[in-house]
Length: 400
Image (cartoon, rainbow, N blue to C red; front, side):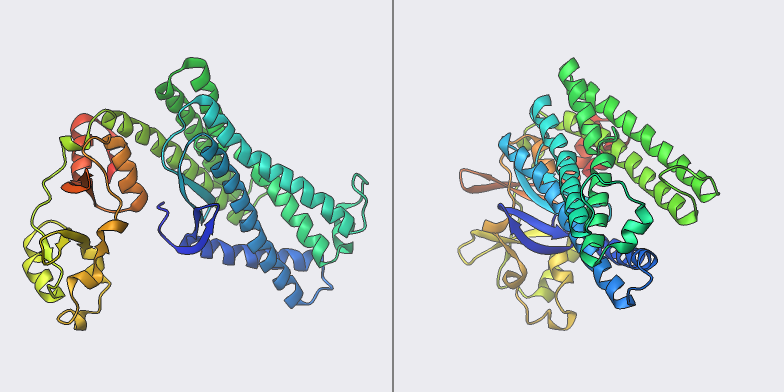
């Protein structure tokens, strides 16, 4: 999951907000499901009313997920952690924090604020729903009758409040990398002063919980009636899918920790390459493809101006985005990313930090700059090779 994928919505508090394309799928599915649910709660409503309220509920739900992630991000900033973006995707949202917290306290407070925010927001919305629906807070009432008596606003607030409480409680499950798993890791980290051991145990618990969800989901799919989760094929498969995702994410977090340990203390200068030949900015794309891309294993090249100074970077992806019938008219410097907009590294930077930059920007290379001068290129495949040589097992996946 990389922050640049999907649709950019803008910035809040200096943090870029984006929506991954997978969100569109879940938004359509949720709107369809809620339309059916609201029609059951209110059989007297016109179909258009149920659809409009369902669409509003879906959009406001993801707005509340954004509030949850903003809470994480703002607390992370208080501890000196940079947050480049927040991305909404299939399973909710993710704050792209550029590095791990520096202490157990920072991890605990950054993690716990999200669920607290969701639960508090949910309770406030439920109180507003009871007021809007004419039911004083704390008054017991038949749930079905209460829902049937609610108007569109009270119905919307009831569902939105309930789902926020569920999201908050669910995130407290101690399955790394859920917030509850990060809280667990912070507790182990604080007790042992060993981040390696804390990550290993939190990841193991996360994988175990994930597989429990998978087994439970399969049982539900085959007819078992489980309290809270219900029964049925769709509910079972969805729970199993969530369990598989959680287990995979927990394993990947452990592999990432191992990869970072293999790279920590190793400077970029250890494996960076010389800058290599640069292509002139006035080269047409046909020539660039035939004389450069087709004759090299590299997928990216630095672009130079008339004075021989590097002014940008052009990649295979840039060429793919250009119309084939215009290759002879388009110049390389029309497609390149200017040097000032490139994410760079330095010869003295840790490879662990540089790898995070490569993963965050989803590029195959980083220019290495020292004192304002280009001194080399760090290739993602070279970092992957270093991990393969210095680390056994599946942690090597993280570099690819």
